[in-house]
Image (cartoon, rainbow, N blue to C red; front, side):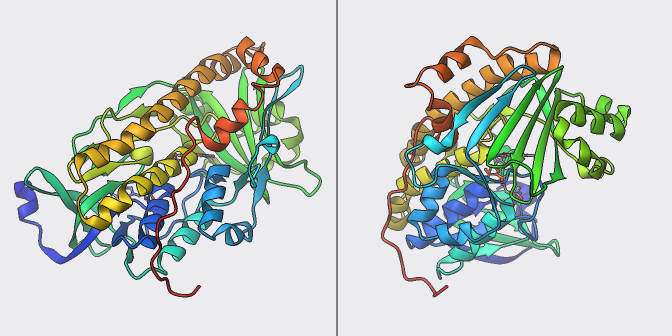
Length: 421
Ligand SMILES: Cc1cc2nc3c(=O)[nH]c(=O)nc-3n(C[C@H](O)[C@H](O)[C@H](O)COP(=O)(O)OP(=O)(O)OC[C@H]3O[C@@H](n4cnc5c(N)ncnc54)[C@H](O)[C@@H]3O)c2cc1C
């Protein structure tokens, strides 16, 4: 540890087998899977609750299958939700069905949409049934504990600014796109520059609105995506990279008008955008760290790779990392010997799929989003038309959305006794 760390006054020291930093989708899923297999897990989350807006509210078929496998499907489906079965792309001239999930061979041929907070509460409530699970909210992790060249835990500050230490054989950084752990460990992500940013907002849904679709509207120099969230529409309004200051300078009325022109059936409700507090800007990034691990430490989810929002797969990719990690590391963690080779096996399994998705996203950004934002005329690229017109290729976009290029299935581990629900 650094000299500065030696001067911290630590008020508590806890021991666990696996310390997970970050209670987003990847951290919460991994914590639950390890806890039910009997691994002692501590999950540290910096916020006081899981309620943050526009974090991605999609639960993909691969995650729906996992939740069914571990007995949580009914409880998830009891939460008010929407279902996206088709992804449509609408140009001024015609409409394309670019992904038809309803044709997939899965018990869950749709993307379920519900507030991410509900999913995270469900996962952590379930994990709390296991005596070997500990959740600490308002735990702001600020330091790594390093012994003999290996990471052996973390230090966090609580809400009273007091230091606590968690010692663990394995620390998992699941702390998202701005990962503190990644920075502390000296990992530098390699970034690409997507051509756009996205302004997210919500608009009311009417009982007469069509649903079950995600719709992309492209043309006229604009690009917007609409997702059905059950009781509301979530709208992503793409702008050229760095264009938010200009958008803001043009005024909120210009944003309302832009949306109404791009998606005419929303014109009757754009007045619900009252001011800039109603919108959230996503600085679109795509990046990947070259190495996801060092002795005692593994990076997963956005901490290891930030995905572009194209295709809305960030949560899916992050959760697939967690499933792969649980499959590969449960046994070593139970034995108490997690080697660097074990950690490398997670990256080896997951990295090719992550790279493939990022490559595809980059192509779609360049061939659909960029021309959509910069030109009046928009034509679907030839390779997309070919895929959609060829029966054996037609399901590929839906499969990529649902499962990613490399489908990871959870290998059910022996579970330990849990408290009743
Ligand atoms: C505006 C927006 C919209 C998005 N829409 C979609 C979508 O529709 N579909 C989709 O699939 N993906 C979407 N994404 C991407 C998706 O949210 C991420 O890919 C996904 O959440 C990654 O999960 P994660 O668990 O790795 O990280 P995160 O979800 O970012 O979770 C990280 C967690 O770590 C906590 N944390 C951070 N630092 C610390 C610390 N020092 N100590 C303790 N805790 C810490 C954070 O509070 C957070 O809870 C969107 C992202 C954004 C920003």
